[in-house]
Length: 531
Image (tube, rainbow, N blue to C red; front, top):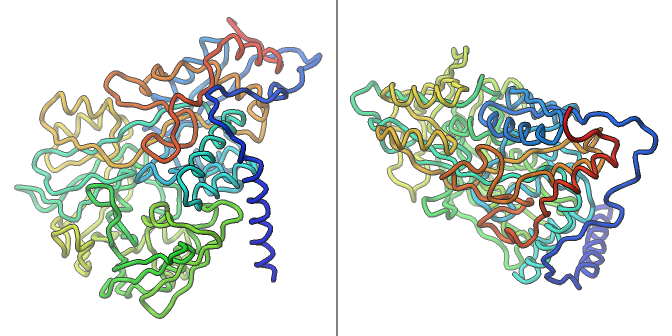
């Protein structure tokens, strides 16, 4: 009875939301709410706006570009370069001011990062943003069938987000993977997830060294927000229900087949036989049920319920409270873990010595910025539609942390048997100009923008958040590396991604108006202009 009531409340709310949104037109000009500026600061003595932008090594240049841009208007923006995992922990705890860490995904549809980052309590919503209307709009975008309905909801969502402003506009940039010419057979993957299953190295000992743009190796937690710099490690260790083919379509991996019901309220997945985890235990439906029960927390909109249960040892059933035809596109790449082993050792020990079904297994004895994986002789072979299948060709993969982008390029040019994933446009250009490396673009997307802590000063004040966006440079002239010549960066005015459903590009954007931005900062009680 409680479950039925919960679903009914959602449906009633959705009907009301649809009724409210139905008259939405296609006006191109976005106007802020009359009360968006807030109340005057009163008699408080004006102070200088001071905040720190935290960034991981891969996004330090972008963070410095943002900071330099804001300093030109009299804001004191400092930059602190730290490990990505530490930044995310501080952001989640609400103690970071602002941060740039970049977010990546396998493809722009459906909705890319929007659900996890914008829904109330979303797994990657570290800004504190919360709006029940946004939750309903995202639920509708996931579950509506008719394109015209989805387009209308997408427009309303983007207009609403321009008024809420949980971040400062940025860009979607390409990522690249590169190797020395003697390393062949590797396949670029989304989120830095290079596939090394078919890789070979000529004239060597079957060993490839992978250079990661990290200061130190993060915990290898398959449930953590994806880090493109660590994606290749997880891709070696874990397989998922599906994988992304060369043309961007989903192909079966651990899943042998899958079928949606006619209403898309149920998905039945049949698992492949003969799959073993690295501890020798066979893959069973219970492992998939455990994995998805944990992984979906905070990754579906409030009001959308997903129940997962096993039907025998080789079938998994997903039941949705609303039609969910894009479920596998959004969640099918989740690494699958062994349920019993994970429960026995706990999340922290598992992240230090992970066990998966991937082509390589964890080898103890790493450390000091170095990790080693060895060939898993019991590998089932991988996706049969992406031959060759069977155990991997490499004997060993060594991962080294090289946080400095320039040094990573130098090492790739100097050291045979080397590969580097998730390179930025500048690094890729340097390698292409040298002419001695194989450089391939990754599928998927990589969004770079400045996230703001909306839970405490100064960014709990909408005037301040709006001001920073009004001070931002126009689309196509984003700061620093976000619009470097030849970077192929695409401006990101909102949460929906270029190439994905509902992206409106320049149709719905905030104006660039430094005068208005500075006036808002003064009204909020901050000094502007020179020191």
